[in-house]
Length: 166
Image 1 (cartoon, rainbow, N blue to C red):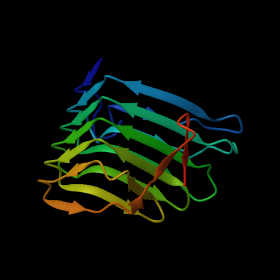
Image 2 (cartoon, helix red, strand yellow; image 1 turned 60 degrees about the horizontal axis):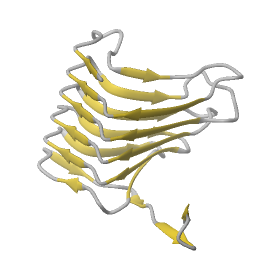
Image 3 (tube, rainbow, N blue to C red; image 1 turned 30 degrees about the vertical axis):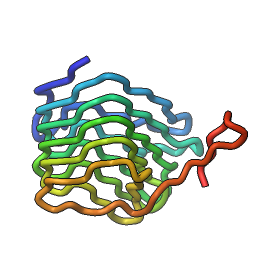
């Protein structure tokens, strides 16, 4: 699927995942998708206006985010439930402002594995308590400002069947 050339300065474009209200939560899987040349952001996962205790979880696999001002963004304002995003085997490139950014006052977390982040204004950016973590298998190179991951996520295999985060 390709999502391209959407939105304007007021409406954002790309993909917006923003469940709201007391029942607001989302579980989203994005697979084999190209998101490019959209106004403001390629994908924004945002819990603004969400009063549910559940939070929002998004997995992105084998996808490309390019040519939008920002590629992937996770936002969690104060008092809102958490945002968890997993980016795997994807390319985030040529976004003039930032490739991947997490912002908020708590658990706005993006975890990145096996991905390429290149040609962006800033490669990786965390603000206000947000976190962008790496599994250590990414290529962060060729950005005007590299930025840095806020930590490393570690997975371990237990009995060859289950993966758990430490």
